[in-house]
Image (cartoon, rainbow, N blue to C red; front, side):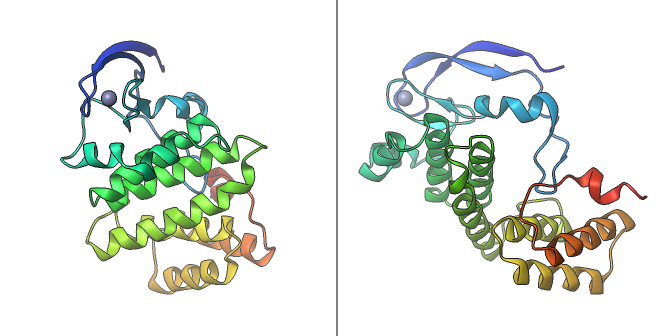
Length: 221
Ligand SMILES: [Zn+2]
């Protein structure tokens, strides 16, 4: 069961005390969609995944935590602009700010995830759905950067490639997705992953860039 509680938090950046909503069972995040988005309460609770300090605007999953160097970024003009951009919903700005902070301190893998979460926020809102591709492009770029720096962004290379394939597809980059698919199929993998790869190949063939689930891919198993 997912419970929401309100807890008192001291901001890592400015020391301000505020009340923040927190989810009880954040750990349970079974992938459901092909891009690993969970279902049920974990899916709809996405708005609680980032806290924001009401005083300085620091955005993080837990505003009591943060690396050395986040203070400087929070005070920067670029961060302020992103945080207060009126053309986008506040929730989206929070994820984009979190991503910017993680990138600034060299956690490219975390920055990539924040960007993917931002894409999910866009997926849920017809008014900003057009921004989802841009967020996924950014996530792909950050995951590549993470790999260059030796940072994992999922458990194992195959899981990382499966995620990248779906990101490419959702961005309409069908050829790159297909190339990665056949590379993984040639390399060989477990039967579940193979089902997913073959399903992705069908979607790519049909130039389908919409959301699909892991259950759809593995239903014949
Ligand atoms: Zn603060």
